[in-house]
Image (cartoon, rainbow, N blue to C red):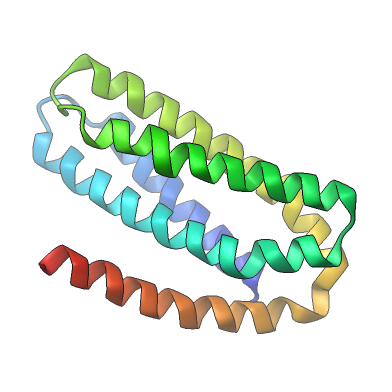
Length: 156
């Protein structure tokens, strides 16, 4: 699979987790906690794959417009990874704040996904179409090692 197909599959996983979280109730504490852990793992791995493999290739192949898009995408990652998701994680799943914070995380992630799929990925396809399979292989290799690191950190 090429890099874009792999990352779109990640986007679908994230959207599915967000949907399940949004549909859960404040009584489903265990379910919310598990889904939040899944969301964090998926987002963490996906962010690293994009920032270490895809975004640098995009920035290098493009011009000023692509560099600005690259910077915006990285800032959106920082917002979710460093600010909004950590806030959601420390919010009691039974409290009304959880639903409010979840809605913000969901909106940010859906906006980010839409921008990537409608703007960045089509440009990427034009700029480096011949390299997408090679980047896909790098993504698969890196994903395997990141998943091992995530599962190891959960057991320790």
